[in-house]
Length: 244
Image 1 (cartoon, helix red, strand yellow):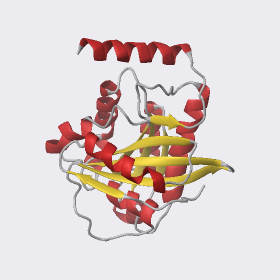
Image 2 (cartoon, helix red, strand yellow):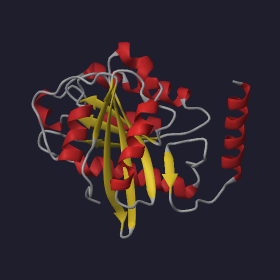
Image 3 (cartoon, one colour):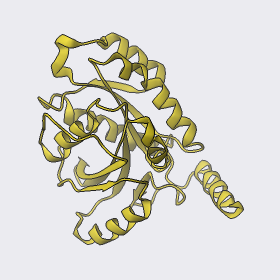
């Protein structure tokens, strides 16, 4: 499932949901036809390489020095999940610094997938993963998110501070898959995004993830089965909006 589309980039210094919608409307006529749209958020401490990994995947490029993300960056990629099934992936690349956390939290709720990154040479970034996972899970209720745990910078194995088996154990405790990647040498980059995309699609097909009008994490041009759980969630969201 190689990428089939070119990346686009948008930067916000503050939460710019309305700005995104205006930009999206302007760009829509140029898009390839897609059946599904998945929103994915990049999560993890500052300097773990979230932006570098996204650039390698969407642009095929690697820079030794990348400016730290300020607020949220936005990327788009198109992939063919299977013959005739085109998926539009929207990526939110979030700032890892605590001072931007109030900005990035506003993007949790409308994401179907979360890529949890840590740097295998930085133990502190690994120890932060459980906190990231818990914060997102608590924030997005009653919705769910499909996560993938990624140990990044595998090209620096000689400086490793987190063992692979230890990372796999954490992934198992969180109920997610684990993969190690390197933006520098492109190791497992496409595979990581493929794993997450397939996991989102499978969760959607089995009803573990439910698409509703009240949620922007998944959009589809294909009619989706309306499950009782989806109807209940949608009614609850409408009720909350009426109370505001």
